[in-house]
Image (cartoon, rainbow, N blue to C red; front, side):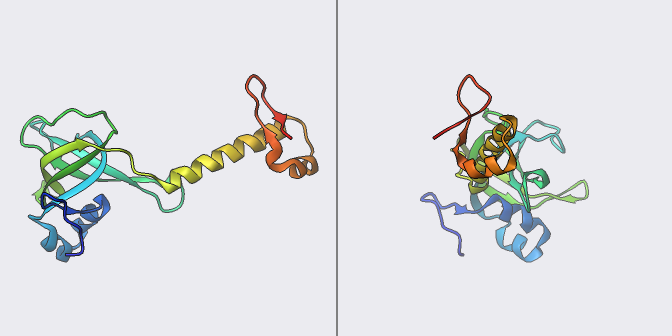
Amino acid sequence: QSHRKTPDGYHEFNLMELFFATGDREMQAAIDGLKVETEGRWVEEKIRNPNGTRKRLYRLFITCCAADSRAIPIVLEFGKTPPVFPENGWVKVSGTMRFPLEEGVLQPLLVVDRTIAAEPPYDRLLALLEVERREEVLRHAAVSSGLSDQEREARGASVTIRPGSSAGSGS
């Protein structure tokens, strides 16, 4: 297999791989019953959870921009009351991957052995969105200051927002 193994024998998988294996019979056959480790954000499982023993783990899938993002989930089965972690907090989960058919739906399900809190991964897209947000604030400050298009272009990045005022210009 091309996936690294943890020191305790779990194959490291990206959550997206586990989710998309649901639609690929060959991939399912390779992963079903495999001990895997993955990470994602932790939320309540509100569907097909009659005993309260499940949670949902997800990552966001973005094709163009944040507005078109979709949550890509797998179900976590604990067989008992799940541990407590913050809603939408990051966790790393290890267990055995299964693909049961439940109520006519093929379900990517991880039967959990271990769950630990995890640090959010560095996200290049979020870093780029933060830069775009800062640039938008600077553009808005320049427009609000009454500068002409030519003056705004000439000053460019020299326009700054100072604490206690709506806009100003730096040097």
